[in-house]
Image 1 (cartoon, rainbow, N blue to C red):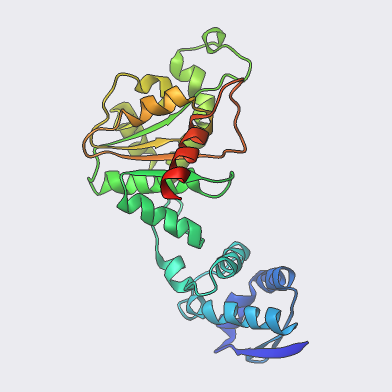
Image 2: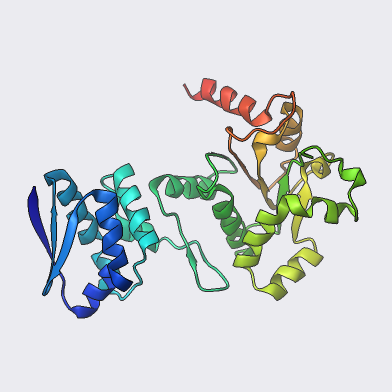
Length: 286
């Protein structure tokens, strides 16, 4: 057991670091198995040498937040811990300052982990990107944010969001409403992301003029998609034939992001096209 200290310049920096009811310090204690105590203008950290040293490194790196009066939340503390655990040489200031977009409500969207940062860089620098990983890792959300930035900066003239529609035991033809009403529930996560990132009037205008198009994957057949930012979501539920069809739709000036979670394949008695792609790419890059 060792004891380390971190100097806190003033009362405001102490309050920002600790958070309401010291909830930020509680997160540090729980995640890193240390204890923390504020004594005057110092934060005292006690724990096993490796744990205490990591906690001190974390707090030292977060200093840029309190010196610039930025809000420090438990969520940011956790992201910071995971980032440093994933990449010990990570620069938290650089990670948190790489803002992609600010939402309608003023929330900043930025890559929160090293893997997310690599994903964003790949999307910015490549025309075709596969984002594979479990739910909640930001694959689709970050891709939608980057699509809106590309549209805003006029690097593309259109955004296309598509998913394979897996009927989950219900025949779409027997559901009430037109095709849009029938497939809307499948696209709710994409609509929600767009609604967060665009003002309502702009969102409505883009949808009405087909500047942003949300459609089932089957509707891509026979089209050539030029000058577009295309996101194929839930790609683990494409068949090999659908995946080939989609990849051959890409035209001049287009960028495609294909996201999916290979542990969530819902295809009945069929192979996943995304699984095929993963196997092929692994052989190429081995």
